[in-house]
Length: 464
Length: 129
Ligand SMILES: Cc1cc2nc3c(=O)[nH]c(=O)nc-3n(C[C@H](O)[C@H](O)[C@H](O)COP(=O)(O)OP(=O)(O)OC[C@H]3O[C@@H](n4cnc5c(N)ncnc54)[C@H](O)[C@@H]3O)c2cc1C
Ligand code: SF4
Image (cartoon, rainbow over all chains, first blue to last red):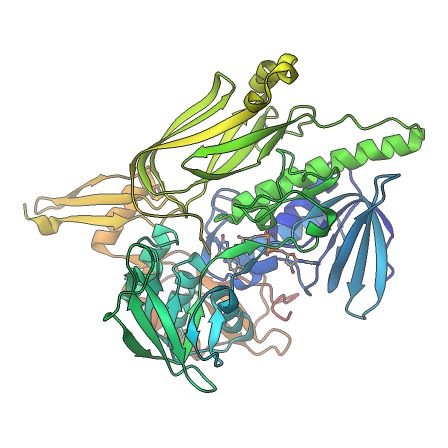
């Protein structure tokens, strides 16, 4: 299929983030296409056959494939091309005209270039693997991530184990504990090194408790044995500092070890562009329009930070798509007028996560451009944050210098559960301009602070 | 009133996952439910005390070589105790009709009175990547 070469917006990835971005860009009048390395759109939702998706977007408890299908329908209705089985190899930005050059490779192995005024990276996340977790002993077959197990069972239709141990209590591991049990495998137990589970409470209930699968906290896999295939694993308890307690070791015969030890945003493609990254989220730093530190490059969904609700993934995609279209539009007008007018520079303010706030996204606010949040409240921007600790009763305070912008109480905050708030930027503009630039450096930021009244022992962000 | 009449229940109706405290009052039972952030939590807790039920999601085999497997879910909850029986019935089932997501595959799954819906697209299958 001959592919058109020039686009206003090119979206990388046809998962829920990319689909929502393309729809929003199209609805804002942009000429947009989606690049996807797999055969079908939907991203990781294709293998997430369990329900619970779309409660916010559609008011229904859909399964992953149904949610993806609805978005794919909306993409098809608009005639947005999905260029599938095509891999983005790399991006460069032309400094003179500001356009992006995308180097593509398709299944026929031919390499071609697309040009875009704006790019949306919606490349999702990947799982931490055995190499990133330290386990002694052999490396036989039968050590696999929960996502791989999910793909084998739900897409390929095989059972990869008869009796297994699950390491890590991330949501995908919990979902797979139930799934494997339903398919007739035995899940000996789920082992979590931390004193608190990292998955959502409802998944502990409906995936473990319902099926009487034991959850062992402060316990981990110390060694794996087996020559060609896993034959057993050694389990042990750990102390408060995560060190194994001698004398608690126990050997569990099993044919597989399934890892559910967290997800990491996937950004190999945009990192070489020198985009500023957030060490805590593992994704690029973005402003409220989901623009990264590089003008014209947007990011959304799990590529920015690991979300626990797909509905919010779509929301961020929508914002990115709308903003990318607006950016491309300005670029185009410049081109038509062939004037060397500069696009008005962004006026960025950093948002600092303080106290027990593990991270907050977006990490910056652009006071010069704002495309408006999804819910029609155009002056508002959506923010997502996670607490670093578990706390009953926490106080969120967002302030610009001495002015308190938002204060809110939470009955419970837990690291696995992301919170969403909206801020009214109309107030902010008033507070921050025009003399904002005259303020001393350290007060030229917005502070988002989470203060806990009582703490549990849970520590950071490992959901998945 | 004995302690056994009060139970802690995690509501699974939405990702909030509220911890509910449910207490059965009297012999013609009425229930006192606390901890729910919305009314669905109350309905869920009463259901959980009287007849716990769940949505079943799984896959079934088809007769079509271009989409050998299709994902499915029940159209609403079925009693938890019927889940394995339903799985047994589905293990020997072969889908013979191509369906869009959301269309009914089995009208009454394992005598529960609840329908089974296809959730992935069998017309333009997306299960073959
Ligand atoms: C195994 C697994 C299971 C999950 N289960 C759940 C769950 O049960 N519930 C939940 O809410 N969330 C789950 N998540 C999180 C889930 O990723 C999000 O809910 C949501 O699917 C993220 O959407 P996304 O569009 O950001 O990313 P994805 O759905 O991952 O989509 C990214 C897309 O980009 C494509 N892509 C990446 N790089 C390139 C490239 N260089 N060129 C071309 N295409 C590219 C990929 O092929 C993919 O289709 C899971 C994640 C994983 C990894
Ligand atoms: S009580 Fe309401 S808000 Fe709380 S988990 Fe249940 S459905 Fe969600």
